[in-house]
Structures are given as structure tokens and as C-alpha cells.
Image 1 (cartoon, rainbow, N blue to C red):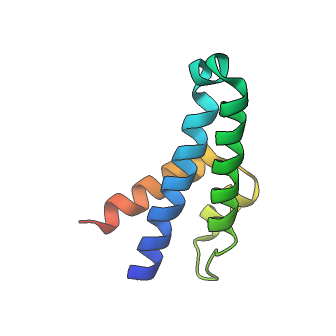
Image 2: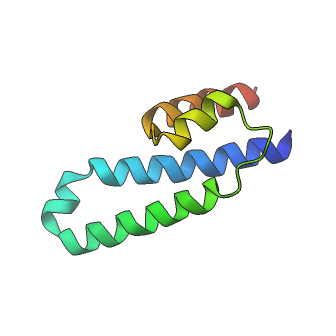
Image 3: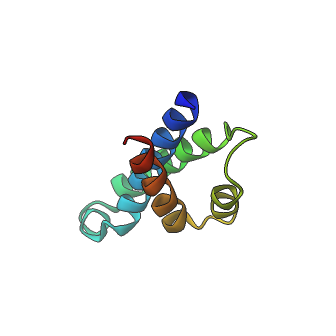
Length: 86
């Protein structure tokens, strides 16, 4: 269970970083090359985390990730991490 919680936390952080960068229009407008580099790095981090999906991962979360429904996956993980910390 602790390993799954740690995985959820890492995946949550990777998703949040990627989504925050996508939404950061001021960064994109100020320095497009740096923004693109940051997006590539965030995508690589997310891909690395997703390459370690455990077999027991919740099917709903797997569905969101495989379909790149990252906002839904982030919300799902936020609830899972919050409920595990109580």
C-alpha cells in the first residue's frame, strides 16, 4: 500500500507539473524556447512515471492515463492521495 501511495504521489506531481506548464501562457509568451524545453522535460518525467504503472493500478486511473485525460487523472490522484493520508 505504501508503494502504491508513493507512486500516486509521484504521478500526481508529474501530472501537475505538466498541466501547470501547459497553462502557463505568460512563460510561453516570454520565452517560447525555454517553455518548450520545460514542457519536453515535464513530458519525459511523466512518461517515465507512467512506464512504471503497477498491474494493480485502478482501472479508471489507467483509462485516464492511456487516453491522456490528464486533468481527470490529476483529480483522481488528488482524491486518492488525500484519502490515503487520513
